[in-house]
Structure formats: C-alpha cells, structure tokens
Image 1 (cartoon, rainbow, N blue to C red):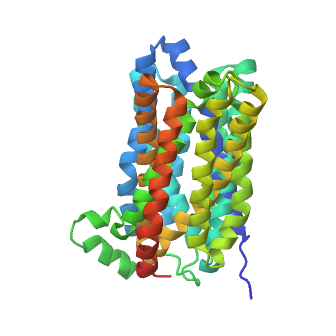
Image 2 (cartoon, rainbow, N blue to C red):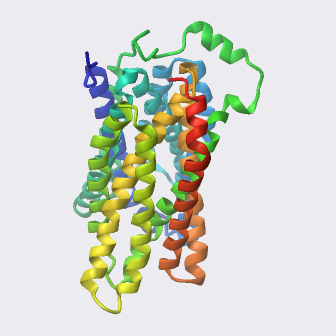
Image 3 (cartoon, helix red, strand yellow):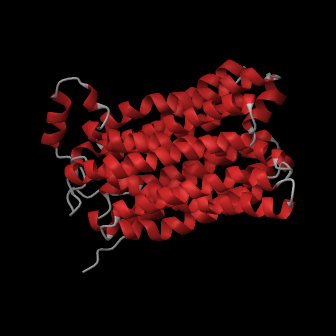
Length: 409
C-alpha cells in the first residue's frame, strides 16, 4: 500500500517554506538600492555588505548539521526561524551601514541553520519510500517564492517605499513561524524519523573530528555538486550582462521565467523516479541536460550576427533546459546524501549537500567575473559547460559506484 505524502505536517512544512522564502526573495531586488539611497554607499561597500549574508550562511552550515544531529531538530528549526523572522524588523531601524551589515551577517547565520534544519525536518516527517517526491514538492515552494517574491518587492517599493518591503517580509515570515510551530515530528515511523536520546548522547560524546561536521562518504558527490554549482553561479550573476552582449536588452525576466518553469516541471516527476529506485538514472539524465543547456547558452553568441530571433530562442530555450536539468538533480542529490548517512547523521548529510553546492556557486561567481573581465560572457559559459562535463564524467566513473557501495537505504 502506497504511503501518504501530503500529511498535515508535510503540508505545513511546505507552506512555511514558501512563506519564509517569499520574505527572503522579496528583499533581493531592493537591498542594493536601499544601501545606495539610504546610506549613500558605493559599489564596493554594497558588495561587502551583501556578501556578509552569504559568507555567514556558508560558514554556519557544517556546524548547524552537527547541532541538528545532537539536539531536537524541531527546536533548532524554530530557534533559527524565529531569529530569521526577527532580523527583518531590525533593517528599517539600522542607523548605519555597518549595523546593517551586522544584521545581514546574523540573518545569514539564521538562514544557513534554518535551511539545513528545515530540509532535515521534512525528511524526518516523510516516509522513506516517498522521500524523493517529498523533496521535489518541497523544493517547488522555493521556486514559487523565487518567482513571486521579486514582483511583490517591486510593487511595494514603487508604491509604498522600502519600509513596506521590510515589514511585509517580517509579517510573511512571522506567519511561517506560526505554521512551523504546528509541525509534529513522529517519534518513530518507517523512515526512523529522529535520533533517539541514546544516539544523541553517543553523538555528543564522540571524539571531535572532521566527520562530525562533514559527511565524509558524501565527498565524491560533493565534488559533483561543486562542479555543477559553477555554471549555476555564473548564470545567476552574469546572465543580464550576457543578455546585453547578445543584443537582447537588460530584461532577463523571460529567461528566469523559463528556468522556473523547467525547475517546477522536472521536480514534479524526478522525485517520483527517485522513489522508484532510479536515483542514479535521474542524475545521469539531469547531468546530460545541464551539459546541453549550458552549451546552447554559450553558443547563442554565434548567432547574433545573423538572427536576433534565433538568438532569443536559444537564450530562453537554454533556460528551460537549465531548469529541467537542475530541477532533476536537486532532489536526486539530496536523496543520495541522506542515503549515505545513518538517520542520526541526516543533519550532517544535508549540511554537506548544501555547503558543497554553495561553494560551487560562489566559485562560479568569482571565476565568471575573472573570465568576463578578459573575454566575453560566451567564454564564461563555455567554461561552465566544461565544469558540467567534468562532473558528469567523474560521476559515471566514480561517484555512482561509490554511492552504490556505501548507501544505507
């Protein structure tokens, strides 16, 4: 008999996830403008302030994985979510740019802990036979928030000002916190939801070592994620500049819309395939799609002298394929990491999964900036496609067999 996925608790987790990501994405379009208009910050200062969030989130993730495995997961989830909510109220009253930077750093710490704990909590409340589908649907909430949040932000900013954006995010995330409080984590189900008190005690008293913070068995797949994150970071940072290079203008709305459609569509089906035992096949096909997508994006530059219509089709068509490829890979790799860890190390598994991805995205931003400075952005994406090819070869030659030998579920 097929086990239920859409329980009250899973639905609540998805709703809370959508709402706090909606608050998060609502800030993204206006933060640089706010720093410029309110504190008269220059570009370098704006870059430093905004980087505080990313750096602190990245630094806390390995430690948050350890905490999730040693204390109550729901308790840590609510603490992180509560801190995440409260910082929104501090932004409008920050008296200086450096106080704003401090708030961004605290927000990053909360976000890094929240995303790992929330992901682990969803796995805890989901039957293991439906885990892939659960992670797929759970991720759709993020993608919907990513599509809606910036539109809400621009509307509120244009008609009511910056403070309206901040307080809207605060109340949106406050509702998420209230919903999160209703989630009940069963003591036992067939996914063996949470570590027992005895296991937590053992975990706390193990010798201090690297594997308390990083899932060592997940490092081969982590290298795959690092390489896959490079072109993704290039896209999110430089796609607008590449669009100008292709003479398509600054409006990248259609590109990200096509990308969101691809991610949502693939998540609807890839998770179900993972649950059928086809995890390695999903990664195999998703990686191939990513290679094709980034190569198409790079070669769109060759068509600019001949036809702007063909260029636009290649540009936006590649976005759809990027969404289909990465949308397939996210739940598959997440499930792979969790399957390599005992249930009382799921926090560490999720932290490793997210950290290796974030490092790849950050490296892609840095590498893309360096290459774009000395060449055009078509070359940037060619290098990104090379990273995807290396990831695919490494997965087929090593990571796949490593996973099959070491998986626990």
